[in-house]
Amino acid sequence: SPIQKHEDACQRTKVVILGAGIAGITAAQALHNQSISDFIILEYQGDIGGRIHKAEFGRGPDGKPYTVEYGANWAQGLGRPGGPENPVWTFEKKWNVANTPSNTSNVEFFNELGRADFGDEIQDFEEAVRRLKVDAGEILAENLQDRTVREGLSLVGWKPQQRANPAAAEAAEWWLWDGEQATTPEESSLVFGAAVSNFTFGQFSEESNFVIDQRGHNTWLKGEASTFLKPQDPRLKLNRIVTDVYHSNEGVIVETDSGGCVQADYAICTFSLGVLQHDNVAFEPALPKWKKTAIEMFHMSTYTKIFMQFDRNFWGDKQFFLYADPVQRGWYPIFQSLDAEGFFPGSHILFVTVTQREAYRVERQSEEATKAQVMEVLRNMFPKETVPDPIAFAYPRWSTTPWAYGSYSNWPPATSLDMHQNLRANVDRLWFAGEHTSASHFGYMQGAWFEGQDVGNRIGRLIQGNCAEERAGDCGEMVHYDVLRGTTPSSSYGVQNGWPGSSMVDG
Ligand SMILES: Cc1cc2nc3c(=O)[nH]c(=O)nc-3n(C[C@H](O)[C@H](O)[C@H](O)COP(=O)(O)OP(=O)(O)OC[C@H]3O[C@@H](n4cnc5c(N)ncnc54)[C@H](O)[C@@H]3O)c2cc1C
Image (tube, rainbow, N blue to C red; front, side, top):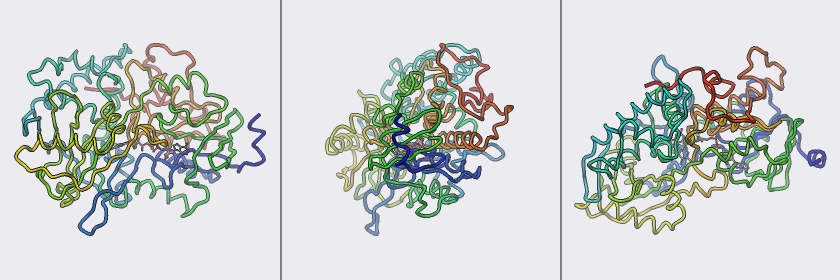
């Protein structure tokens, strides 16, 4: 077998962790906390952080570039006094990560003729979402068939195309739905879309803070890593591209592009759903059908922030600028000012966000083509100003980045909790963790943290042999389902399927 063939040449360890993003680092920390120090982390990039990913952009007054975040930017759903706190927010505070409150009421509205007022559309959409969540709660509690968010919105009476100002209604809807999930209402599950929002913003709080730390947003994760990894720790192997993963019920062998290999009792694969869907890591034997099906069924979205710096501020002091294009939903819809108080005042930096189809289009076309389109929009938004060309302009291409292939995952309609559990479940000694394996916080940094910790704890207990039977559910191997039914019985909503407690969607 390939496992025997490689055994002699490979470095030996107990647990090999694939990826040094949040899930990978957190899994290693969970092992460390159980006194398991025999692990190796293999990471594609030259640093810790994964999709918390900074870039240098533009120039400050001192001539040095600003650090901006191409990936995760907000701590979302912080927590309230006496209530549970978002663990990521706890770490951001612990490591003094500079951040500023993001205020979505600090917004101005625009259409192709300049300033407009469609605050009512925002209010009406928010009201529709409240009713939508009541329906979602009922569907979940009664174990009924899921539906799309679009169908759910229509049923509570939100129909953008039938409103007086369809473009404005679509802009409001895009901002508050697509701008969060990076996926359209047509492509999103009503039940689990409502649930992830309640778990993050209901359970913690509505507040989200925007990180402006010039050391980079990954500072908190590097801080946590420094509690158990020494500088230059030989167990953290950066710049290693995993190409092949051999797995059996006895162990794993992992090969990298440099010809290196690691043999371990367990592997934890934290690659994004996009990487798993791309087939450029070979799993041998091929992953079983229940796992492959789950990987293909869930959805990897793309969320693209386009940064621009100007020689002056022509947009004023607001944080957000929502643009309703007359014909194309999602056409350069939300601009954000980093020139605003609390961000980088004096930087004259704006960024505009596009998602999904518009993100793919922008990521495939040249920077020049994108710049021309963005400038046309800005000149329409500010007809009374002489809008200059930007002095810096740049954006990432998440959909083709080989260590991510997209931004974050989203739960498609009519897909059950059992199906999602198949995304989480281990295959022999090969385990999976990441944002996408979180049933309650998929798409968010905290989702990756909860899942990395869970898998690290489970493997630690298996290695130590201290998985008491009464703990079954959050201990031992994960369950998976060879046969999937249309819905998951209410009684199965528990930790064994990655559902944290019994808290359900509420109004
Ligand atoms: C544009 C964007 C905006 C976002 N905004 C927010 C936000 O505001 N708030 C929020 O909470 N979340 C946000 N997120 C989501 C958040 O970044 C993720 O949920 C989280 O970082 C995922 O962590 P992870 O450990 O699951 O995966 P990753 O961070 O992807 O970690 C996986 C690691 O595996 C490595 N890897 C991949 N392939 C290989 C290979 N073949 N060999 C070796 N290593 C490999 C990768 O380099 C990476 O380091 C955003 C993400 C993006 C992309």
